[in-house]
Length: 417
Image (cartoon, rainbow, N blue to C red; front, side, top):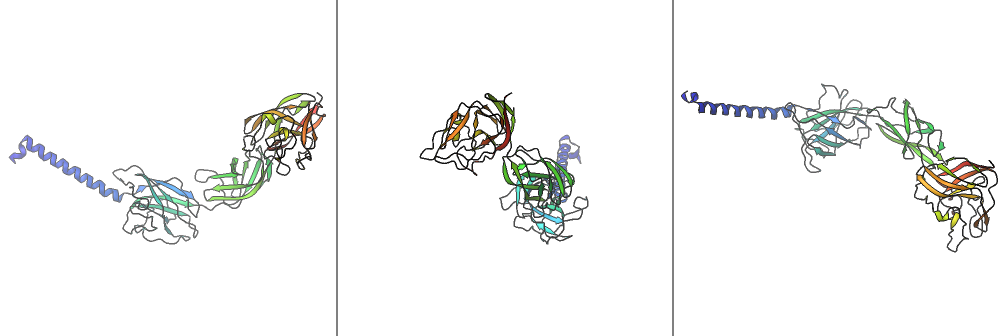
């Protein structure tokens, strides 16, 4: 008792008590980490029934109540296992993961347990998982349960405990889409209606809806009902049979075809006869790999057909902006033969501004005269009338390969005013 009365003795006793209290606290924390289940946040809470998509699963930073954390291992021995367990109300506070995760059961209308076979460690609070096939049966609401045992073999130890829980739903994939109208301008801007099935009636983060046409995203998508949505076509290089791909939370489906018709817009669309004028042309694909405009070939006399089968000048294998009476047709163009319906004049000094715009100079004071496959300039003016401005990616290749993937059909009027 006298020892307790001394200052030093009292201090020593109190230090010992504090250490014991701290140790007890640490033990309590360790115990609660096993009992407390962390809330699990998924990068997406809805996906296709067949799985194969990768999602990330995140838990909060550890706390005293639930200081669970993910730990790393090798690529095949990650010490976390993930199961998808059918649950009618997976988001309910009272919904729990099974305490025996070892058994997988086939997914049915109201049951099912599937262990994921690919789990990857990202950080102490984040892992990723490849969603397994959940398509069997009609069940579509699942608990996502993370256990402290490796599950990459497809099973989880029956002694594993739950680290975290969350929810995940599957959604019916969309049906094969169709599109109306089935063609429109390459410049885009056309309103279209897409018909499919299992579409969301409103577009949200949980019920996404996107679509592409020829690999380019459709614009201004508006949900109409479970079978329809509207959109606006994007600009696209002129081409045929472009597929529509519709993507929802349930997956993607391709179908339908749409043709981007050749088309350009020119300004001004009139030129005084016997004069030259700069014109602005808007279209799509002017920066394409096959669209090489060469100043030495633009608006100049073409050499006669050479032995190696090449041409120079206005008939070179480079890109050209032609003025044509009617529809350009390069068929029959060969040694000693003229194009079936070739160019009358050419827009020279081409300057490509962007993939959708170029400018050039149209001189209506000169026309081409074709003789035995060689096109030469004359001083005769283009006769007053309405002509077609056609951009070709190869001035030599005959039909049907001569047709550009970019433009044809915009008219230019030559008149005496």
